Image (tube, rainbow, N blue to C red; front, side):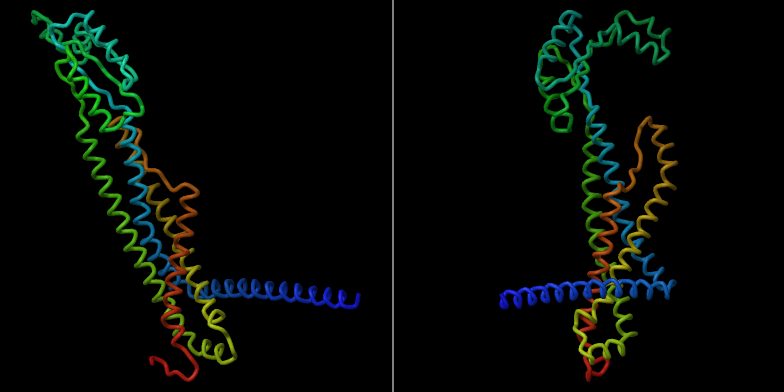
Length: 330
């Protein structure tokens, strides 16, 4: 019984010591995070300049990615509404045209097939062109029967539409097939190039952010050199000494992310009106999409990680070189 009591007291003491150590560790982290933030607020101009540099560097690639996403959504909408126009032979009667309509509609890769007979086409042309008097001099209707073919949703992309158009053109009774996807393919090629260029720009500007934070932390290390030496003389570990600078990098990253988000919101607010008016002139519903909640959160987290990385590289390079008895600059 006495041994069990001793073991129980020893286990309780171990758990209490572990809990106290964890609380002390967390308390020190909170204190260091608070002190690091207060140091930044005590130099508001220098901190704001660093945040602005980070904000601009982060907002540029994110803004381009948002524009790219809007363009891809717009091209996808145009692809989804793509239709094929099949002009039939002039010699085909209305009955033969309807039979061909049923034949094309029975295919598994067509969702809808509309027949516009030549009389209806001529009537619509009279209304839209305003050439009633001139059309009255025609002896015969020069317009052919026309099939408007809508592909199934699965094939509403450039390759699927091209394949269906080639098969329709090979049918007996079809004189010509028209589908204009060349401009859409060029748009997709441009958006793909823009996407790759944006990621290259993001990597370069991310590296620039890391360098800016690293240089800022290096200056902070040099200004607190005596404080670091004292901490190491009294037995402070490397983790203990570097912790304030890592939190400083995190705060710089968070501030830069917030500035980047504000710049994006202001830019979208300023551009959205003219973009909507321009899209209205072309009868398009194109709009610039802003950052959703998860995108804004990812921006802040990514900015904080870049700030932490820049601080860690600076600490690894400069802080480890500061040792008691080592002259400055050696």
